[in-house]
Image 1 (cartoon, rainbow, N blue to C red):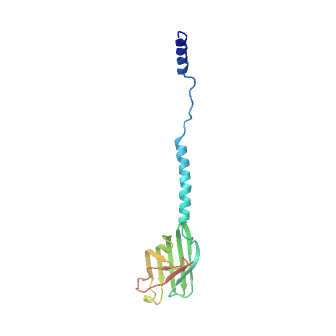
Image 2: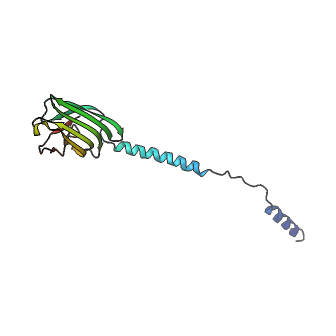
Image 3: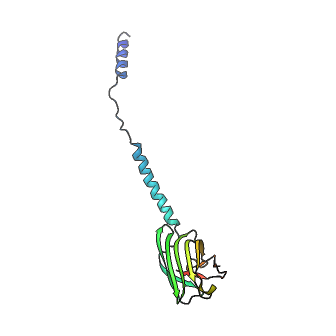
Length: 165
């Protein structure tokens, strides 16, 4: 028993002795957060691109029911489902000018913000008719044609303005 007690003390001293410190590398939390943000951005971009409507970019036909022939209207993409729009149809002294921005808000609606100018000799002796502000073009055939929804001009006549894609 006398030999057992000193051995027990020696073992307890050895077992309590610190031998080595473990080195744990410090992790930079900002790098982890940045990598998570990059992954989230990729996921969000893929979701947004799948929600996009039909691309309308390009030159299309523009018609007015009181003007014979067709004009041209150009859509230049400025953002997702947003376009810079300009077009005209001219027949002699009569004309239709469209200039502004347009945004697809649904598969059936194209919101236009800008000016629609026209001078038609049959309407108020060709007096210049200017409509500024927001207008709605809508489609019933899946986006092949868009018709101006607010069709009454300042002279009180109904216009049939159509954009053919």
